[in-house]
Image (tube, rainbow, N blue to C red; front, side, top):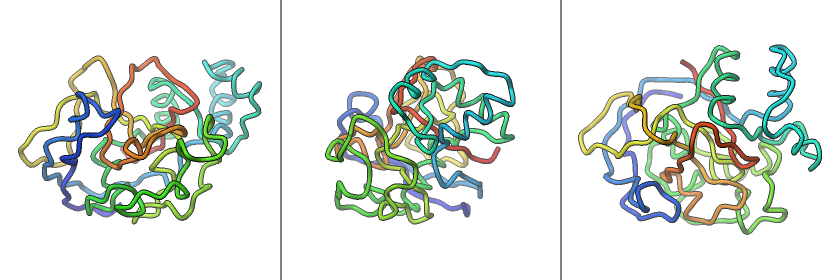
Amino acid sequence: MPGGTFQMGTDEELIGNAFEGKGSQPIHTVTLSGFWMGKYEVTIGQFNRYAAEVGLTNHPLKDFFISEGYKDNYPFGSNWFLAMDYANWAGLTLPTEAQWEYAATGGDGRRYPWGNEWDPTRCRNAASVENRRPAEVGSFPSGVSPFGMHDMAGNAWEWCRDWLARYPSEPQTDPFVSKISPSKIMRGGGSNALPQQCHCAIRGLNGIYSGSPNTGFRLASR
């Protein structure tokens, strides 16, 4: 990802957004240094390789994935701790939410990775077939972001490194919220997401021990 300056957030009140729909306000200027980021969400197959190498014999959703027939190329459903353990093993980390939003929008403030108009055929969402489960990663090439990132709308909520906090109004450079709060940030919406929950600026939140098949992650450089 090339570095750049963009306007982060939206003035829209979004269903499911943090702080009673207003969590993406105010819009504020953010400057990012260049960074690397995963083109796809981490898959079940990739996580299983990690689990075998480190001797992790069980995780909260292992039996569920097997019983429900989830394929290796589905996004791995994870709590925040497992996501960070995997990232550390890979020599990487989770993206900050500023990095995530920049990668999703290309820095131009669009609502969805593909543009400003909602199109349910471009991502796994509540209008999709079999919407109770995510799709295999990369199943919606028409929904990629300007930087070529797949599945940044719908499919699986994605963990970020940041703890939840209200946005500042002043400009920021490479922001990261390290102050501990009750929740970590998730981005992007899940496989049963409504259109507003697929907005690039939506800020989901969850406790660090909570995970589900709709809660995945992708990696970024440290």
